Amino acid sequence: MMGDKEIPKKQAANGSKNKKKKKRGGSKKRMTSEQTSAYNCVSEWVFLDRPHLPNTDDFSIPWNQPKEKLVFELHSHSIHSDGFLSPSKLVERAHQNGVKVLSLTDHDTLSGIPEALEAASRFGIKIIPGVEISTMFTQGRDSASDEPVHILAYYSSCGPAKFDQVDKFLSSIRDGRFLRAENMILKLNKLKLPLKWEQVAKIAGKGVAPGRLHVARAMVEAGHVENLRQAFSRYLYDGGPAYATGSEPLSEEAVQFICETGGVAVLAHPWALKDPIAVVRRLKEFGLHGIEAYRSDGKLAAYSDLADSYGLLKLGGSDFHGRGGKQESEVGSASLPMLAVHEFLKVARPIWGRAISEILENYIKYPSETNFQLIMSFGKPKVCKGISPASCPGDFMGQCLSLWLTNEETQNAEFEAIKLKLAAISTNQ
Image 1 (cartoon, rainbow, N blue to C red):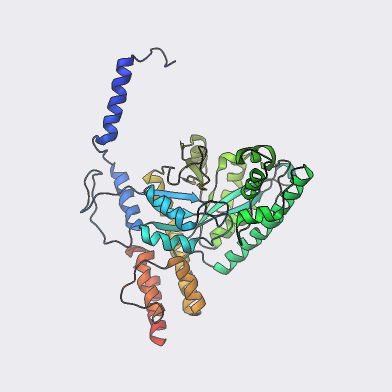
Image 2 (image 1 turned 180 degrees about the vertical axis):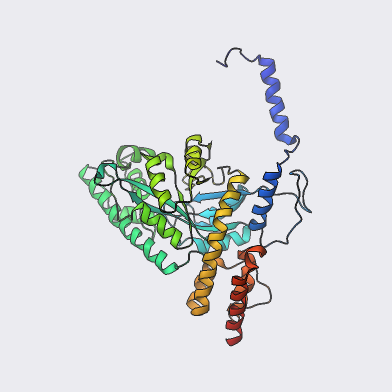
């Protein structure tokens, strides 16, 4: 049924042809002045390593080169948590799909970021260092209402401020994931579904904290279930017969911690929660910046409205793992509107600027090789011509500033003073 009238077959066929013609190259859509302004601001940040180009008010008119589509992918995973691809293969896949900005958000670890950055430099992709933090949301004494909540943290080009604290915080959660996996295996064995720890550890990979997906893959290999979906729907779902918790921090604690370490805190997949309104209401009080409202199948109106109600950013991503199959959303497939990206960067860039300032001030105070290498593991640019990182680390980082921040962001007294201090370090060395 198509409503009151059925569309005639000839008309439907013509409509189909017209659609095909438009796809082949119809007239280009003009951007509104607001969209143009957003595009120019976002592209300036995305292409900091390129020469600045004059603005344009027309989507169809290039600068001195074709105007590029800016695809942001803000939720993806690699083999450093429960993904199936290495960070470099993930970046390559993102490049093939036209992604310009990628955030690798592995569960409870930043260990894949250096490899992602190395690969991104070959493909011309910008990396936002990210992490998806496992937390527990509780509504008081009623433990039945407790539920796992995942918080995405997005950090600056230099990574988080207070990196040692972040590393310790995430390490504690990962330790809990090992215990959690062991408890899941024990529960499955009691359910007459025998699994061995060695099977799960082998699937997870050396040094990777195992998660539910690794246990599910072991169940498929052992023949206990037909596929991953069945493993989750029967045994591993939240509160399921083989479900277990680890040592996750409270959701409020994680959000507050992200804010204190120079990150942007965003609630992941709110549609998976029992009571997303209660979660958002509470976490907003502790500094939550946004929630996911976009998926590969489009914008979810209910969560867009929820974000508006609490004055939060509306973001999203594919949550790509690389497992394949019809149920998997492709990396880069969640279409974020340019205005949403612009709003994200308007909130994020001042936060990241303060974090970079704090990181560099700490290096100036303690100019060790270890601190230098830590900064470079996140923020090493593709090219800093004429300066050797080894012989002049201060000068090198001073030049890198122009690739981490825009001219407007660095042209203030604070960063001018930082540049002078960095130059002094190089002179002394």
